[in-house]
Image (tube, rainbow over all chains, first blue to last red; front, side, top):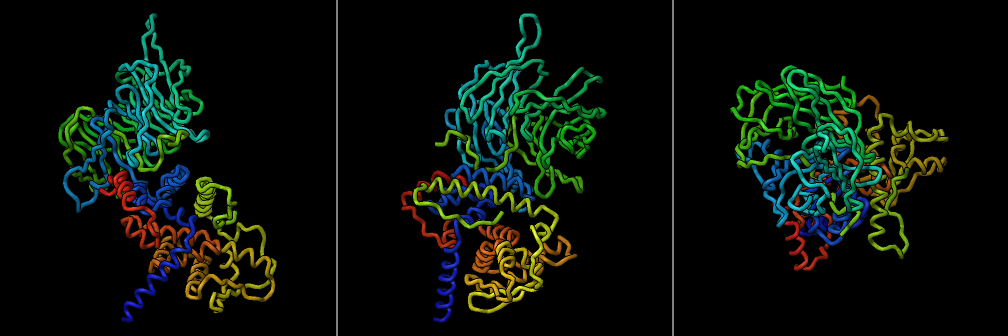
Length: 369
Length: 201
């Protein structure tokens, strides 16, 4: 009897205390939670659902993510078929030996490729246009097709502009003009304004593929020259000014031609697979070519002999490196002892992948539903 | 900037506007808290003026009337106390009618620890972890005290502790922890669950 009384007293005391927790404290607590938890907690009450769906809260949550000392929760998205890979789960020794893949269905909008990712929003090229998708909240927004006819010589990028609190999708293509010169046509879609605009573009270096977003600009690697004389550089495109900025030279490393660009701890990362190693370098101070430092050089003797595609690299929280070789395997590499584990993945020909953060940001920014 | 509780809003504001205001305020505040934590200098050195009172020790009175002494340097970590000390040069104990003695004792202990010099970051972190290694109800009490007394570091520590504790919970467990009576009808709850079903996988 006394035990029941004690338990009742404890419950009623906890309810008394919990009732005094004001909304601003709830907001503080919730803003520290991973996006996945918050999506679950939408079921708790109408108030929580309304709060968690609020874009002001999403922005606060995003800010908290960037302040966090622990790396924010990230996953890999693959474009065709649309799949999510939780690479962090690979690091969990207790879990299975295979890659856990989550398939996402966008209905009629079949993805053809990736166009960039930023703040948890992923931009996909689909038949008839583009899509901006948040794989965590599963919100997707269809964008109209740009006025450019899609060609093979096109490049894409997606990123955030803090001054206008907007996201922009960049779609560019190269055409050979009548006189034989290469012309670039550039179109930009602003999520806030909701339409495509043609943007002047002269003397654009020959870009290719998906750019990587960092600090208000999208970045591609360009090559000058050929063979031994190839010089490489990073070309940034400023999303606020909508212009290409000064090229940042990339160090010339023996036998290495960098193909991949990524982000590591807020710094630009470049990498390449050569016949003998997997090389990665980071630019410690943005814009300063002297600050390029080798991050790692992994000998690839032990790895299965395959063609290496350019895929994103990620670090797990415990410091292991995750990457993909060929179409059929993911590798989890332990830098400390040089050992690795490989995980088979489903074989698909389109290996466009990107890393994204799990956030609550809505693609409908400025056009709230 | 004072760490404010939810400001009183006029009746005319709609709930969403009120929320937008709160969140916008919170955006600024939480950034300030995190930025101030990254700042190497101590709280007391950044306050505007030295207290004019010659007293080194301040007396606090709990809701039950129990008194606790705290060194002024330690008390200055609380913006509320800082303001009260500035205004109250007399010898009277500062009444804190909404904080129980048991909790106030611990808050004093926290402020004293964080005012100590020569403590390395690693051991302070370990001490903080032990400090919040208590029952949920007690952590909530700490939150309320830290909120009222405006002690940003303690509020940060305790809110983070609650966040860590709840992140893996189910919605039902959350309702119990926060004593929320779900306003969803069973049909509505089913719909919300369906909309977000992948979050449960």
